Image (cartoon, rainbow, N blue to C red):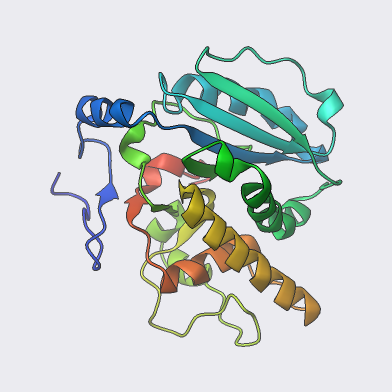
Amino acid sequence: RRDVLLLTPWLAPIVWEGTFSRDILDAQYVQKDLVTGVVTFAGEKYWFFIEGFMRSANKYFLAGHQVNFYLFTDSPEKISPLQMAPENHLFVIPVQNCSGWQDISTSRMDIISTYIHSQLQHEVDYLYCIDIHVQLLAHIGVEIIDALVATISSWQFTPHGGNNARETRPEAQAASPEGQWDFHYTASFYGGSVSEVYKLARACSEGVMEDREKGVEARWCDESHLNEYLVHRKPTRLLSPEYCWDTGL
């Protein structure tokens, strides 16, 4: 493809439809006998997204490969049984009440890092964090696999969209100096090796806590902290906005 940017300035690939051979990548992935995990959160106001997300992810996310889905919810008893593909497993993990988007956004980095340290590092090789309201519409395969993976926000492709998403207040831990941003990344879909996701989640959680102690909340909560982290620790692979397009656009 010649119509899109395929490499970042630091030479990380940007994955667009039509820029890879899934058959070749699948053959390489199978030989490594890897397990990939997916983390998602469903608080009280998000229960009605669960079935749609799980049905689409079970069908389209790394189809044919072993995937462990970790659903964090404050009401595990209300989750209906879901039919999973033979190679997939669903684990429902109870968490404290997270009723609103901001509650989830400010706590999930801490929860992710805690569970990676205590459990997930022993169960998966790669881990991806995907918002519960995401609907997968086509296959997402092993072209997403790399050490540290971020998805370019579809809002970057609107006038001034990237600038509007940035945290600029110097008192916020998520603030980055002008001119250091390369892309704006969505917190709705990111991941990588379980060790790299742990580092990311731990750093973002610490930033959220420091802001909270000062009475500050980043403009886009954990997404702001995610972007600040990725300014200094560049992703090894980027996914195009095709992977998480905002239908509002």
